[in-house]
Length: 124
Image (cartoon, rainbow, N blue to C red; front, side, top):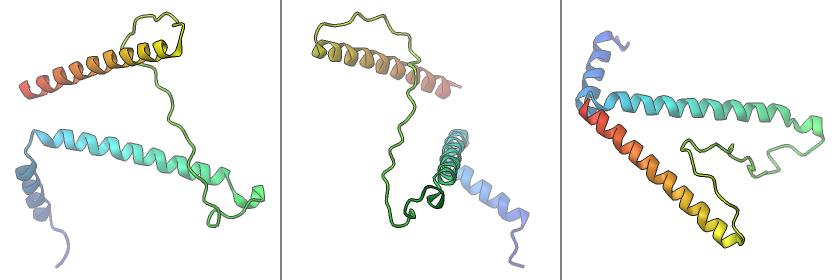
């Protein structure tokens, strides 16, 4: 009697569509899917690193008594926006300023692309 019936699911779907609207549901589902993919990858990575760092095999103290900071780094990605070749600067301050300018141009280009995609979604 307390089992979930098919009409319960239909009512739930209707309430969700009414609350969020049909246009936002695909975007919400897409972002949830991406989040789940990242979560799965991180848990898989943690399991793999836990298996390789067995305290009994290495002779170290158990993990419950030793807290090690997470020192993993994000992989370096290549820029998707083509950049102009740069000339090496004589002083580090000029090189840093040049890198900041290049990154600002890339950021501006990404913002333009996102605005165009958003306008296309709104029009479609």
